[in-house]
Length: 274
Length: 247
Image 1: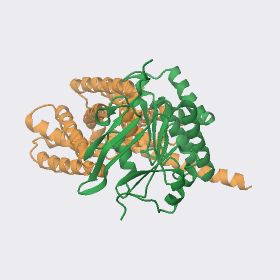
Image 2: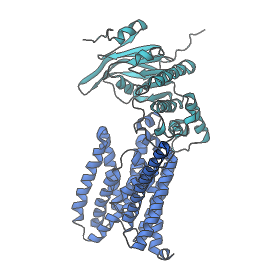
Image 3: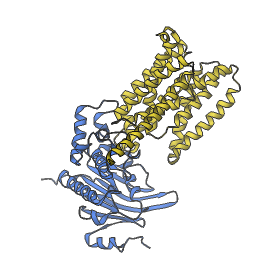
Image 4: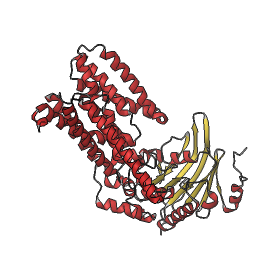
């Protein structure tokens, strides 16, 4: 196929598929902990880190990673101080991140480079970024598999998990760091403004079909992979921005699933009435 | 022949006080739950029943006194596999969590499986056994969201039982459950108490029904705790029994 004759497209598929596996692994826990907005807050933090990295002359992804880890730990810290208003911690960190990103972006000399992080540039991945994505992806996959039952129990019922002996604080800390590094590397590829959608939409689709937690996890990954492949093909042939196309594919699929379920329910009701 | 060594009480509270900010909840209360007790804990809303359970679980720090769990200070207790706790609202994450009954019960086998270890067939069989004990084995593969309120409570009870605790702390386990299910849940708890020797402390408002099954009735009101005997039960139901701090 012509699309695979180009090295940048082969890289885009490799990076896109790796991220399509790890983003839903993080996303499902975030959704089940009812912290869907955390992806948004961290992606804005990553922008502040990108700007800081560009100003200081270090790799923007490294800057984004550091900013995301600080922001994620900040969210956890505020959550602990205000347990009854955990959503507020996300809003506070997001506001601070937007403010910081806004101020620092004004000091960046190469505005085009900064803007590429807003919507991602999966077809312009450097060797270093490729290695970073591969390392982060395998680290996240390994951690998710090893902590599978711990993350499940903490998402299900943090208090019961603690009583059962799960080291909840350590598990939450590791998960926070995993979320931060995932958002940081994804901001370069699918884009900082889009990564949170990639965390939530595949999970939302999977929850319509999953008959167990395990199935829901596997379906989330399958949906994310499908959205990425379809999105990359569409973006290549229709000359669209890849990050946005991938997310719009996912959202369209989710709406179609809801519509199909509604129609199926209506037909079943008619069938029962007849 | 020497006297048999007496095992420490499952729960022992001495001189226990707790306050939220400047608002005292209860002051200098004391009680013990002997092994094999099935105790109902009564009291009006806001009397501190759930707070008492949280103190037993070591989640709150008392203003004075302390709680001993199996002879050890609850604040430094580390044998949590001996304790099963069923929270007031069942699941913190809600009834629509995408997981099967078996997955939810297996989660509580953490201390047996170990940190970063994988669940094996033997653990899943243990979970199915626990579901069988609460009459839910036919629903092992069903999603939690597809179960009724009473069935969900049974699954959560199986989750607590699977780790084979010696002490069960239940915070209004019959809340929001229909009358028929309440009776079967209470009968199940009574059987676990009699046949398996489980020590149970159950916070409840439904003393009229629970009194048929429990062996002790503790009442927490007006900042003090008293134990009621059967003859005082009628008075409790009409709120006429005496509390030291009753106005």
